[in-house]
Length: 220
Image (tube, rainbow, N blue to C red; front, side):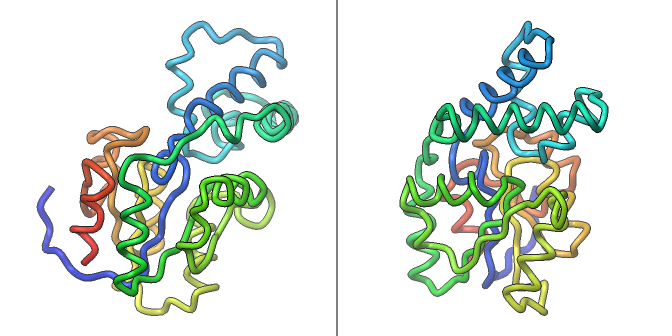
């Protein structure tokens, strides 16, 4: 995908699958919740698709749970994730910390925009010492910001970003790209996370980045 490059000042980053490989903990959390709900997971690889999107969407729309069962499953998932160590079954992707350091040094304003809740987000950022790179952290909220588009809008509003041409969303799944498109900002789909080229291209990513360090080339 070839587009004319332009400099961005505000760089919004997804967390799961973009900054850190949180897949193991998330997939284990889904397996735990699904089993507790009385079902079986026959192929754990199928749980990869749940890394990134909002929990309510994954349990409700994709797995077909009722609203009541979705709420129950989310509680079980969070029990595993927060109380049984799932949040730290996780690691920072190669090149991410240098990318953040370089962008910060270059004067960019860095923002986290994630579908993860505040508790898990803060735990991950503090554990891996990434919080220091970000000017603002926008997280999801079951009531106030249930969708990725709500998180991005919140980030733009709280950071006073009026010129959307100066902002870009970096993420690994279609929900990151679709939300960016809906809000009206450009996007970079990263190929090292949990979404593939077809998913990100179909969603309408402005650019694609194979590795973390390629993101720097696209925003300067």
